[in-house]
Image (cartoon, rainbow, N blue to C red; front, side):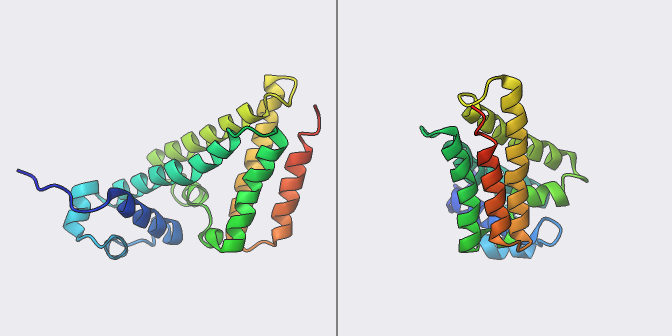
Length: 190
């Protein structure tokens, strides 16, 4: 009979996510994951799987926590301009708190692993499309057509994720503020 798990799965997923977020997939060793989670290597493998499975679980956990927070923000009961402002404010606040020193795990995965791993590519694309759909829905009341909402959503998503990448690169805050301002001004059409 298998023993019940004696650890908090969400805490372990947070730890795994943070290690992959900070170091990336290739630079993360199993020893890093063992140290971060406090689990033995066998327990980690037994509960979650190999390094690749751990990485995919970290990406899913990141989507469930960080990306979902952005989607929830876009579903709030404020104007489309305020939704986009708040979305970029989350990046600006993250920069000020040092959260994006390691970049965005999703952006990092799209650069490091998506070009060489189909499962990661699919996961990244699915998450970006979820976010874009949330932006499109948030804009529908402000624009005249579905095509216009989709085009604006594409531009906002590119600016938003671009801001997250630039935050990792240490770009000046003003660049992100300018991206925010341009994205909000693009909504002054209705």
